[in-house]
Length: 253
Length: 267
Figure 1 (cartoon, each protein chain N blue to C red):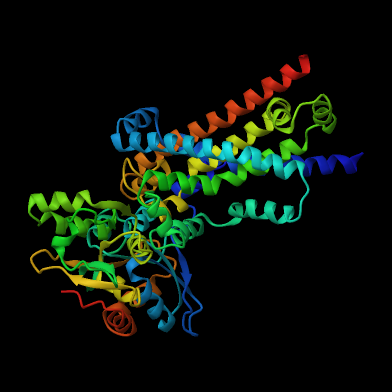
Figure 2 (figure 1 turned 120 degrees about the horizontal axis):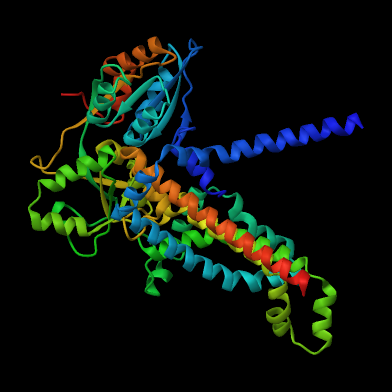
């Protein structure tokens, strides 16, 4: 029974999932802004948070899907930023967040350890290649399936047969690759850049590339709606946009 | 006696708060999920796979823990030697190490790029992304619960009984098997139940070290986490099954231990 208690607490969303990192907000910020953001935004958002003046930004990074589930269970951050348009749109339809706004784009790429000999999609289906990819519920996993769906059936089966782990978010995939546990995975270009030289990017051919869009929304019932709006505005132009660009994100289309 | 009475009230209040706090989340799971949903979620083959895998891996891990842990605990309980305190501390260390850190440590130790990675591979063993890796993670995280309890149980045995066995000519191995283990059984069972429960709920070390793939490494807690974002009801239902299983383990062991104590008293 004792072990089930933390699980139950998790299920009831008493606490934010994933790593919490406190950003040092600007001096002017007495207000505390809570931002639930996709794991892949961690580097860019912590950078932005340190320069964000209207409030002290605190972040909860996890898979966009896990964060959406928390909001459904009554957790109320001020801002929700996801790696896909679908999750915020669904929350918007359910009346849980305000109108979602696209604020960045990213590229899905093949990520391999820096010293890997893999150099293309064709290698992913080779026998003995261990792949770690995102679980289907997480945006990175949904995009991965989009890519696989565009492969010829035989090749798709070969790649799927090599999948050894479905990770809940991008940091799981990054960890498996940097530890040498997996030979390749599908990640965002920014994750590879954030891994600081330990991983290498192999671009997907343009016909396979999914459109990766990051979307943010003010959460209904937010304690700091004004600061939340300012935070999202800054993502579109200003220090947030600059931080996103430094981390390798592109403008939304 | 009014002084005594207020203190009793404080004690009762403290226990009340503790009990409500500890049971409410578990009760809420069963309130939130109806019996119909519980049964239909068990029709989900993914959930059944996860439960089966959890039972298999915890059973193997528990077997390893009992086989290695029992004699190790006997040694710790009955001999004094240099470095004994250090050994006890090292055995207890996984108790306070965060599970995700345990997973990272296992990767760094026996993962493909780890310290002993090549040795493990040369032995033909594959751990990461394999069911065997789940067993390793569970064993690592759960064994201190058993060894600690077993050591305490052996330590609490009446030394005169052990002495008597030895003076009657039984060797230490025979004394251990025939006298010590049967007499310490309630404590050993309690330790095994704790270890089993801990293994059944293991999440972080498994995810980090072994990964998550249905039927291979996705144990029930990992399956719950995966469902959390998509299908909360399914996550609750699977949680309910896990709570029920854990409760059954705990009750079963308590009953077994209780029956034994009663039996001993009668003998």
